[in-house]
Amino acid sequence: GDLLVTPLNWQDLGLTPNTADELVEILEWYRHRQTLMQDWDLHQKLKPGYRVLFYGAEGNGKRLAAAALGRELACNVYLVSSEIFHLKGEDTVKKLKELFKLATQRNAILYFAHMESMLNRIKDEVPEKGDLLFLELLQNFPGLAILSINVDQQNIEKNLPSYFQNYIHFPKP
Image 1 (cartoon, rainbow, N blue to C red):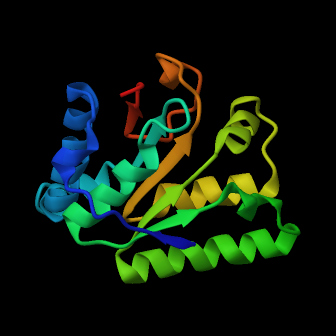
Image 2 (image 1 turned 45 degrees about the vertical axis):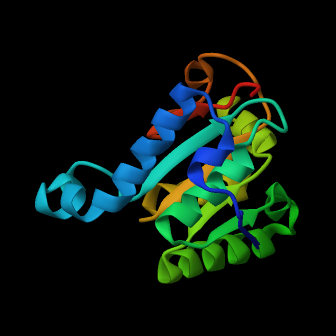
Image 3 (image 1 turned 60 degrees about the vertical axis):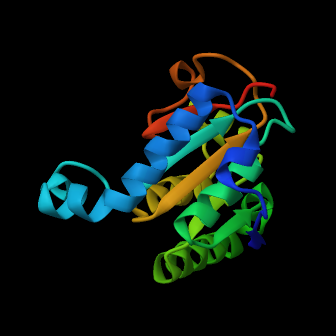
């Protein structure tokens, strides 16, 4: 994937207070994840990592917010296109496994853009082989994974499977 970076500070993003508060929750989880999972023994009850869905109309700052999270946490953020799901069968499997392995080794944040089609297939219970592998890898990824969709719909979590710890809406600034 491509590296996402931004020269902007956290305060420069112009986010709504609600969106900013929800992003701070991600920062807090990331900074305290070892304490939460190991010291408090939550690793026995929860899957590793943190999975979040960013949603809102195109151009509302989802990608920029992901880059700012990376800057704040001193982590690389890799942009992964939904095109990865359009490779030939085994190529998709190979690329997905390689991607999650490298992200784990490098303590990187994964940002999956334009995931509408894949999430719709899951919602409609017609997933492809790559979709199922992706969900398995996503659920076991120990880092921060952000999926992004260009859908501006309130209460979207009611329409999608509960694969995420959080759903963050990016309204028009």
